[in-house]
Image (tube, rainbow, N blue to C red; front, top):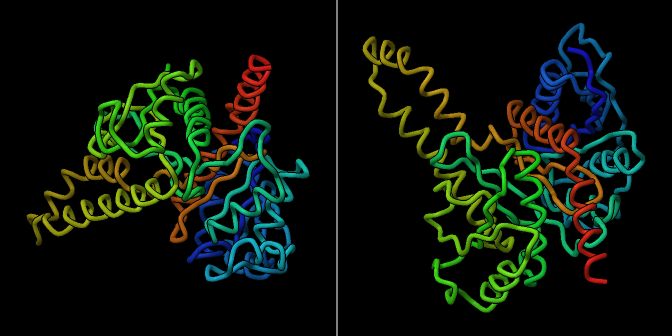
Length: 341
């Protein structure tokens, strides 16, 4: 496939299965998506997992001398290891040598590196990690943010999450007039803690979004909302629970399918349906979370990411680049600032 010109910097050393699964996912994306991949990390380790006779025409290995481990404190590690793979990858985006960066390593370090190297978009106080969830309505995902970047939030942070999420939902997920919900313990306007009540009022008054009220836990996967905002504490709990439920359902399906010849025949008949079920509920199919609000496209993947997750993270990054998510968010906030001045 001919290259589209999109260049993706990949932290090849980040993740539990690095660099093998990271490289495998990147090579698949190179072939199927036509992107140029920049594999950042230890050249010897990367070259050791490259398939024989790999065509390096669309692959570049960018050396990085250090790796940030999962047990290191994010900010101090980023400052102490300027030549770490995540720092080098972020610098490629900052220097316009790459259009996006992906890391399945230390999520805190990835976020810290993004803030220090790329900075925030003008008008954005805090970036948020957005995760795409499947819903009970086929082909209608819901974007949840924040799912871990900000444990404690001010009301205006969640208002900014709602605006950024609406832009992403509209231009990348293809939703016309995305319906925004506020994660809460009840659908009534008067429900919730002080933060929820104050955010509800802000969202209700914001003319830049289509606010559809509070979303209870049972509403998250209903398909009634396109974007749901919450603080990073609640969002991360929700994310991890949803991932566990998906794995639980897949495990039940594997256990309950009949054994022996009967099971083999039944499985063969159901295989297309099972594949579609896996695509809808397996978190690996969504690649990771997009860090919205920083001055660059940054995807934070799961630490356990395998090749399919990396491929889907690259696909997500390419879609964000192709649909000019950064430019649209920046334009929206510049418009708001002009109106308020």
